[in-house]
Image 1 (spheres, helix red, strand yellow):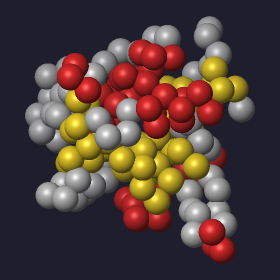
Image 2 (cartoon, rainbow, N blue to C red):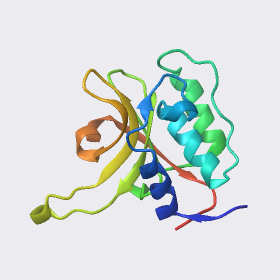
Image 3 (cartoon, rainbow, N blue to C red):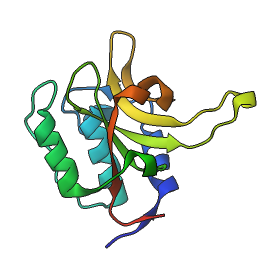
Image 4 (cartoon, rainbow, N blue to C red):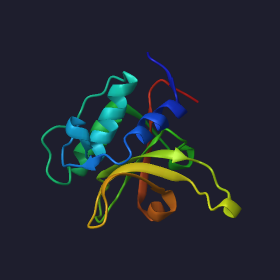
Length: 151
């Protein structure tokens, strides 16, 4: 099994900041959706990953969960570290969105707080962004870890 560091995962995800959001985007023309972001990062790591194909604007929650369980190890939310993946709810009851945890740093004096990287499509944001996790705290549902990551 190929191994890699947490920082490598974050570095690859950060290299995609600013890529445009496109439903079912997988890196062509620098476009991704949230699942596409996971797919591109996995591909650049050389990580064996089965992609989710042909889904509606919001993928079926059960299909996304099954895909994540097939490709990753589920972990408690309390154990999610940088380079791990959140499954979260955005604007709905069921979790249908993914994001990478990018930072654990908290420094109140410097205004730093833990962040996540995800492909977001809202009226004001249409790209891969890094945002404070706190914005989504109540929407975090599950945690996942890439197999082979160095802890």
